[in-house]
Image (cartoon, rainbow, N blue to C red; front, side, top):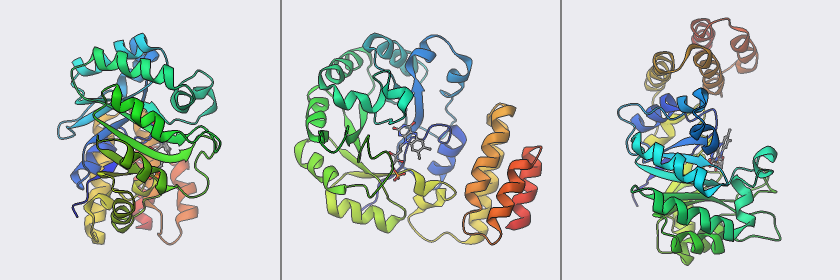
Length: 299
Ligand SMILES: Cc1cc2nc3c(=O)[nH]c(=O)nc-3n(C[C@H](O)[C@H](O)[C@H](O)COP(=O)(O)O)c2cc1C
């Protein structure tokens, strides 16, 4: 069984430097963090920053968050023109202020709206359209299969399933049987997602569900070498961390670079002796270089 392991979109985490590091470790097709369609169309500078792609990342999908079909279509056209290899619609974000606007996981509750959005997006772009869904809205409305069938009918090229419901947020265990049910229901490739923390977990998910690929989110935080699918020696891990810090410094705006360096180094502390106090020192560090000094002192 060949493992197609992918990095999950994660807001304020899976920016270009982290995606490129994941790719260099062997990750398959990449997806950007969610991009607010309305802010993109309005030309918001911080949103535009999220659309940056580095050489070596392709193929990379840009993920859109929104609920207005025309705004989403315009955002998708712009992302395609800027070089996106695919457009992914976010139907899974559980955040209260997002679902209050009918976006993200709220679309799971409104199959008609979802179908109209997918149809409009499909017509707007030439590159593949994909969608990332949840199991449903809550445990009384587990409708991933229905939504997946609608998405297939509207022409999506693939779909990713994070099988928890919106109400579950990130609690409990991801019910992989919902991924299996979606695999059985559609012919397009299904990417399984949820609670995969190792290559062995990914192989288990593929066996249990028949999914075509596996997407890893939290399991890649502080451990992008998970995409190697094999043991990665300590000196190689150090090289990857240095590479990640250098990419952040080179490619992100300074105010973002310091936040991202600290955040990722805090994750890289995981499992090291003295991690808790080092994390505090990391977040107090006045510069990215000082944060790196704290980290390598611990390493
Ligand atoms: C910090 C964080 C941010 C996330 N942001 C997004 C996002 O922008 N778009 C999206 O589709 N899913 C997002 N997710 C959900 C993940 O892509 C994934 O579906 C979820 O974490 C389950 O996979 P995991 O168990 O491998 O972490 C986010 C998850 C986390 C932890």
